[in-house]
Amino acid sequence: MHIDELLKMAERCVSGNTSMVVSQHWSQGDSVFGGLTAALLFHVTSPLATLGRPLYSVKTNFISSLLIDQPFTFEIELLNEDSRHSKVTGRIVQNDEVVVVQHSCFGQEAMANISLSNPPQQTPALPRVEQLPNGQATELTASNLLTYTEQVDFAIAKSPQPDATQDVSHNHGWMKLKTSPMRTTGAHLICLIDAWPTYSCSEMKDQKSGTIMMWNLEFPAANHEDLGTQWFAYQSDIRKMAGGYAHVEANIWSEDNRLVAISRQSVDLAS
Image (tube, rainbow, N blue to C red; front, side, top):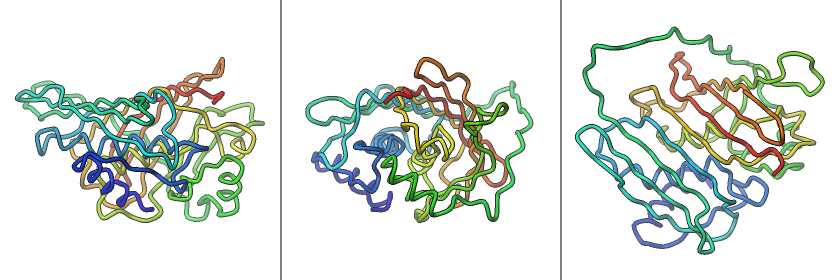
């Protein structure tokens, strides 16, 4: 099922006070892919904010797994709104337990005398032939049940190698939804940002995919609703990996070299 259909289903779920399910086409093991989970919750909470206010941050806490093919519901709330900010929250409930909590902040731009603009990092060149091979994608899916990767196209520029002695903490490349949405909204971008595995594809055959405990997203671009159906560059750096946990930071860039999002994740590697 295409992500646009799932987003519409989430809208109907909230408006009709009913439940919905996600099938195994978007699975991560026996759970719903975390990027889609966060995207669905953001999609139903964002209309609570004043229309037209740009999105600045989304913080998602994954308390436990959202299970595939089992019904769940949404609980949404406008926490606070003033002349400049809208703060909304949402929860996903499954089997009478809260499994995901999310807080989003929208802000009205204001005139200010202080500004700082750092020159953008160089985004990797979009590969023409190094796109993730179908055979490799099938093997990754079969061994780790990451069926959500079938919904995304990857183009690898740099990835960590398990036998390398240097430069083992970077994942750089490009990504886009395999079937383009009608238009790329914040929900689509949130889903896409989480698609890139923490490990390289070669490592994924023997490693578990890991479970995200906390995910913080910031959106420097004032307007993330007009990004079209382009490729997005993904530059990820593992800041620390020890004791079964990893702390991962990533920058996401548009094709025209705009920094559109900053991602920070705390990952449990043993689950």
